[in-house]
Image 1: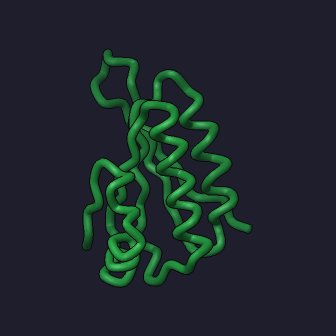
Image 2: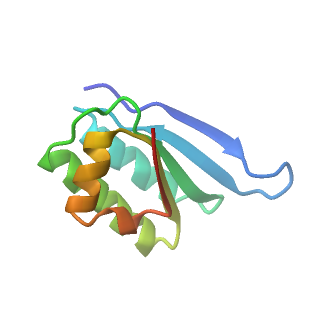
Amino acid sequence: MDKPAKRVRPLTPDSGQRVVRMAFTPGTADAFLEQLQRELQKPSVTSVTVDMAPVRYIDPRGLHALLTAGERAQAARKSIALEGVGPAVYKALHLAKLATLFTRVHSC
């Protein structure tokens, strides 16, 4: 199973806070959740942005992974934003009422 890609960028040069960019692709739900949990435990990480561009279709397992991710972020008092959400995934997120778990759902 491939590990999701990750890129970290500082919010501001001296803030000490980071936004972690992670990719979510079909077949990486378990690795995604493991990596997300590690990032959420870091005090310097305040927000995680998930690149959903590679995802054209999301099945129940993928929706469950995003639900778990959103719940973990809320418990850690951190935020998750979804970027590059395609039309089918966007519709699935709204039908499953999951979009409200994320600070931003940006569709492409």
